[in-house]
Structures are given as structure tokens and as C-alpha cells.
Image (cartoon, rainbow, N blue to C red; front, top):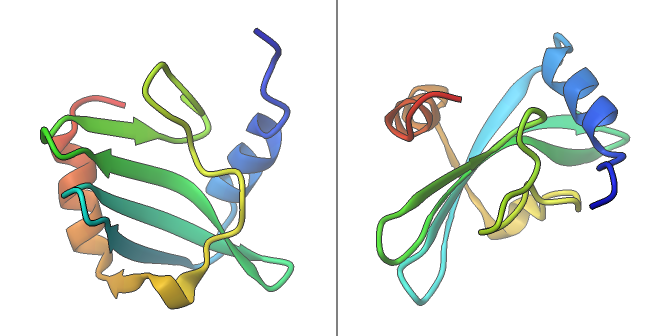
Length: 101
């Protein structure tokens, strides 16, 4: 497996003091995605992501775990017009419920 070249950039964005926004999306199969984003170059980049699949399995991605056998932190800017903005508290509650990072 090759090293993921996104890690330094995602870590830099995550550790920056830039404002965060939080988003929710769902699919027709019962899956749910939550994102924490930071704006860079006029686009929103996910720095943390929670995926809850239809079986209610939780998968979390961030700069310390960019991918696993299930999936990966999105590598494209978020299309925020397809997402619903949520509160930081709502995102953090789901993130924390997913277990230790």
C-alpha cells in the first residue's frame, strides 16, 4: 500500500484555527454521513467524517485514519448544496459515540 499523500494537508487543516462547519447527508439505503469541514480555496474540505451504514456500523475517518477496509475520508471538496448543516454539538455527539479515535 502506498502512503496517503493527503495526510499532511488534512492534518494541517484540522489543526488550523479556521472555522469549522458540520454537515449531514443520507442515502436511500439508510446510510448516514456526517462531516466536519474547513474552508480552503473557497471550497469545503472534510477533516473528519463519520459514516453509519444501513446495519448501523460506525466508521470514522480523520487525518490519523484516512482509510480502512470499509472506506475513506472523502478526497474531494464537499458539495455543500447537497448537505444539511448541523450543529457542532450534534456532530461531536455522534463522533464520540463511535468510540475512541
